[in-house]
Image (cartoon, rainbow, N blue to C red; front, top):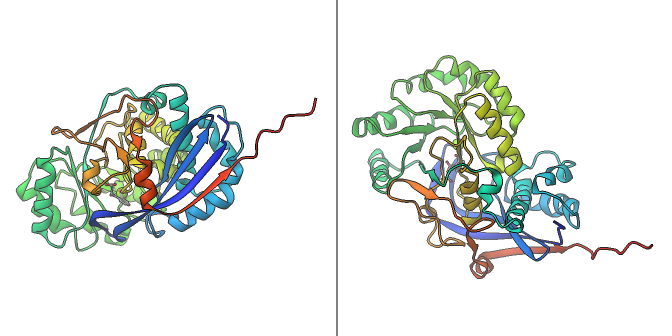
Amino acid sequence: MRIEEITLREIHMRLKERFETSFGALQDRRILLVEICSEGLSGWGEATVLESPSYNSEATDSAWLILRDFLIPLVLGKDIAEASALERTMAPVRGHEMAKAALENALWDIEAQQKAVPLACLLGATRSEIACGVSIGMQSSVSALLSKIATELRDGYQRVKIKIKPGNDLSLVQAIRRQYPEIRLMVDANSAYSLADNYRILALDSFNLMMIEQPLAWDDIYEHAILQAQLHTPICLDECIHNAGHAKAAIKLHACGVINIKLGRVGGHSEARRVHDVCVQSSIPVWCGGMLESGVGRAHNIAMSGLPGFVLPGDVSASRRYWHEDIIEPEVEVSSSGTICLPTAAGLGYTVRRSRIEQLTVRKETRSATPVQIAAQ
Ligand code: OSB
Ligand code: MG
């Protein structure tokens, strides 16, 4: 696959509802999309950055700069045999996983189209539908949270995740468990706690939570191991797992019982699959995390979630939970039993709505490779 042309663009999309976590609130998304053109095919990827470096160290503007000035120049014009080989070409750039994932995933889309198979099949999917949960942002009151949960359960979602922070934790879980003693429930702290307030986390241990996601620092593994030793509830690591090496270390240290995999956080499908494989080998269940993606990022998440280790419901939900109008067709829909059917068309399996994307674009840069030089004989 010769990488002939790359278009980097920023689109603006407003979430239907403000999404609040322990690190802040989000509503107006500045989403980066990458389109690669190769041998008559076009592939799409999304850099799943937030607007500020509050979840990880990347952000919309830093990813734009790294892509434009470093990654695109490295890959443009290269002839790459398989999408999984693109990592090596981008290796001179350290970190910036979300920027890299946008490019690598776009190439996976192209490779799947070239081979005329759905991306999920190319990645090694073993299922035809995936299980879906929801991640509910912090609400203005307990009753608002309870009514939100009621809506999501009515829509069929298989598990509920709520966001917590110190002081906004035990009371929420108690209230939910009073009304719903049995639902599959979990909490995500987005690194809002330290070992000094471990008692707040320990207080959640008796509520039959499926897991407690990233209670401690975004870049810590060791202290999570200390906390896990005090808890029955499995810890799920999110922020601190950037590659298969981190996953191995976390598992060996008993720092977690579950890992969520986000394509952007680990740098794309190749590394995501390695993290998946490490977890499967150690019997650590995984699920697909979300970053409030547009349809492009969501379609990649859906394809990845077909792998055999994704045994728990992911934060992969319907387009209409996020957007009035998504940028893919058909929009992602969730069945009344809380599942998404893997698409059967080649590549991403959804049609990218070019005209809609054009309307939402606020900046765009296209770089073309110079034509192949005919070597002098
Ligand atoms: O920690 O999983 C997280 C959104 C933005 C940043 C981090 C996280 C989240 C979510 C939302 O929980 C998941 C989704 O519905 O896309
Ligand atoms: Mg999380």
